[in-house]
Image 1 (spheres, one colour):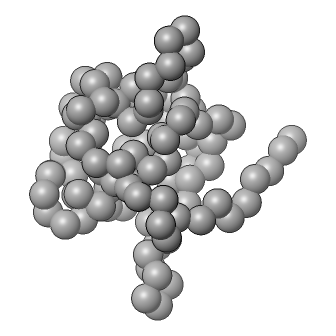
Image 2 (cartoon, rainbow, N blue to C red):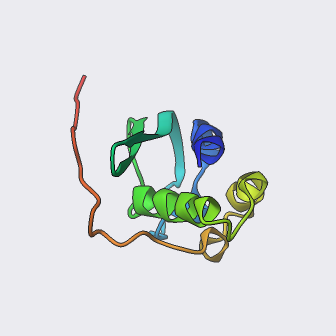
Length: 105
């Protein structure tokens, strides 16, 4: 899952991980993305200036699919390049996901 998170970093068209909204760009720049384990918790941390609708839940869902061995970590580049919502497979449910911090500069 850490390999997948590292691949999210940078400027990409995240159309595969976003709910489509006509006229809005799905290109985003992710500054940081990482998975950590803290006791019984698995934590996904991500930093960007902006996110698309359901983008973080989709990134988490895809990462979990990789962690469970359902899809290979090496396939993340193909999913990003596909720009197809169906390619990302799974949107994580909101249960258990927490918005920890919002920063403004």
